[in-house]
Image 1 (tube, helix red, strand yellow):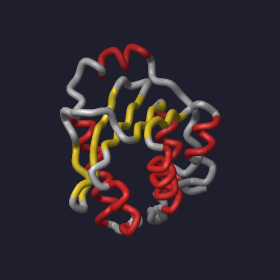
Image 2 (cartoon, one colour):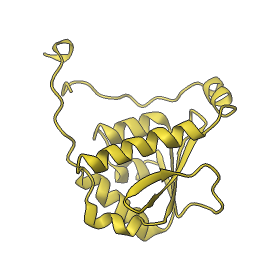
Image 3 (cartoon, one colour):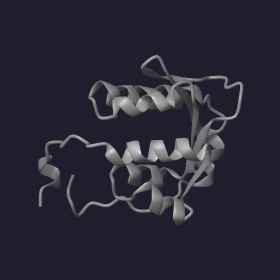
Image 4 (cartoon, helix red, strand yellow):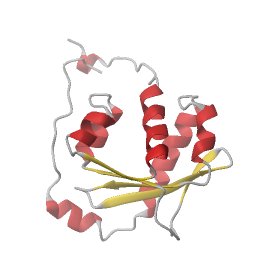
Length: 150
């Protein structure tokens, strides 16, 4: 990624959320879980800390798209939860731009949280474990595309 490229703070139009909220939410959980399991397979997540996530329920809400994904970690895999029977142990809520900034390591969870751009609710200890796991991820270097060369 070009060092000069930054993800701006943005908010999707409310029309997008009003449409997306009416669509099934299960694809979001399937895609998120597939990404998390791919990170597991690539050894990007600290295996020894994953035991703290066992049977915990997580929810990720994308506020400006009106979408959410609920999932759990059980028996060594992340799994989607289509009909949760309880409140999540840990929940995150933010606009799409905040999540993209997190993934790109442009912003850290603490900054987004204290700037009120990332809401974290639920078990505080579990939240710290997940935050530390996110901070410890070493993303693989992707080859630079000619389009983004300086």
